[in-house]
Image 1 (tube, rainbow, N blue to C red):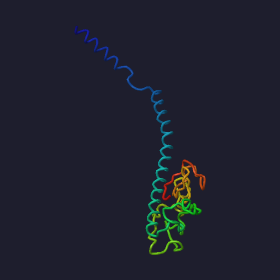
Image 2 (spheres, one colour):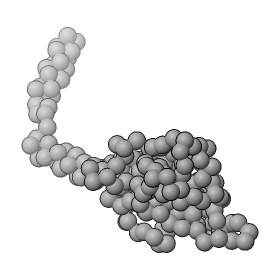
Image 3 (cartoon, rainbow, N blue to C red):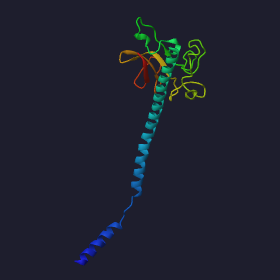
Image 4 (cartoon, rainbow, N blue to C red):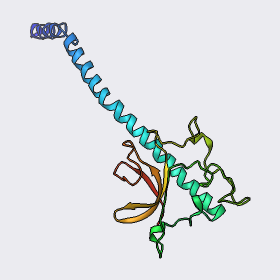
Length: 184
């Protein structure tokens, strides 16, 4: 009886003394799989980081326009705040603005042509949003925009936004645009 227990322990011990680690081939396969997953995940992660930065800036831009409208009772270029011109009766032509750093936009600076002092309390966005050349660009190098006649699902809206990764601009709206409605 005791010999059976002793023999069983020896057999178990022999099993554990065998090859208990990974072979070089197994390790190389695991490293290859991790490298493939990283190769897929890192670019995707970067895409989402750039998109989230653009969304945050567009939201800040919306808040800046609200502050501008509260202070001056005007939107960029002297437009009526919070209204899409296409929805006015009689309708007016809207407009697209790609240079949101211009004086008549009033977000970063003001020359007094559209917004009078002391009502204008800007700048409404800090200058750290501007690149080294003073341009207000999204993460893909395209200017942020304000569009007073942006069509969404058949309806007209005033929006601020970015044309997104494909950089399809003016009047070429598509699903990768990042827009926030600021008026209707």
